[in-house]
Image (cartoon, rainbow, N blue to C red; front, side, top):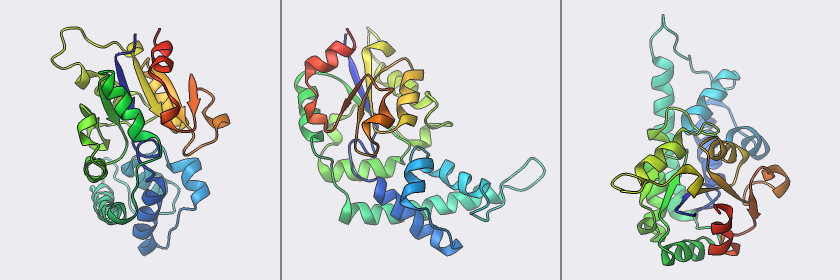
Length: 236
């Protein structure tokens, strides 16, 4: 029985992955670093901002000292500063270049008409998510938003999906079970996380080809291809 849908955000609701890449590169330019589009989609797309900067530092591309037990936390403080800069740049880009992906609004309306609770589980920052949703007048569709700040481990770990379901269940007399929930994702990191949380999966080919999303139970090009019967059958 279908009782809830949890959406990824970037690459599922909004076409903002390229905006994140542009924001990263604008901040990284001061260090002489640039992430190529190919590398971003191959290695960094599933990362939170923190994990992305840490991965760059680990590879030796970003010269920020990472903290150890015997050293100060300059590395963490440096990354916090970079995240603030990146968030500011992203907000400016989102105001001018952000857009909602084709088919999303129709899908959300269909779910609302069928009284299906909806949540977002994303590695993006809450301010970024709220900004895009408010501008597109979509905020009212979502009962719960789990963002990067609320997760100690990002995808492919299931923590975010587990937290989103826990929040959806607050105040419910009959809790929603994980196998009554569908996660909609655009990356293999997200699909891995949803499966590890015990949820059903739908993939949308906004960021990767269908072949790279083969672990999903259902794959679509646009979300408005989905019917309520399609979704209910996944949870049957």
